[in-house]
Length: 191
Image 1 (cartoon, rainbow, N blue to C red):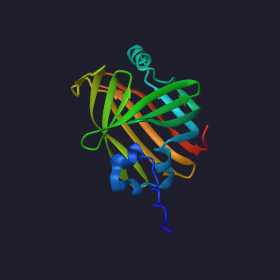
Image 2 (image 1 turned 120 degrees about the horizontal axis):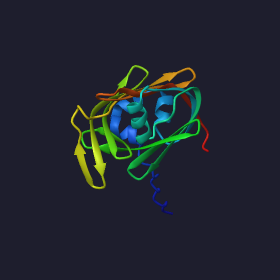
Image 3 (image 1 turned 90 degrees about the horizontal axis):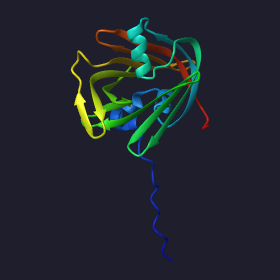
Image 4 (image 1 turned 120 degrees about the vertical axis):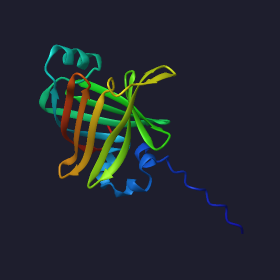
């Protein structure tokens, strides 16, 4: 009797971050890896907005969340084809971005018509996002923004006892810091 050939196991495509980080993906703590893959997480954040009318107008245009202390936060990371969506809810305010891989191992994250591009680095117990550019995108057309007009984002995600600690700062030339949020999220079972 001849045995039937084994059916190869079909593995899901690696997470977007696993693709970008290659072998460094395994250097991240398990919880940081889990929270950069598909799933649901909840936590609490402190959200700070810059004062002033111009900063408020820019925050409104970008749909940035309002300021608040100890804001209940929900994060859903989901994948659709080559895109990964990060759906954040700070209290009742949604902030959704899409991410995808660019040539050269870069991450593009898009909010509305603006896409910021990052190089990812594993450092210590977490992940650091180093911004290397920004574009304005309208349909298939895109234009690289000069540094003077480019939003600036600093971000890191670190393993911590309460979950994953996150620090994000968003600024703009001539306006300074527009928004910062920091806090923690912890993975939960699927919604």
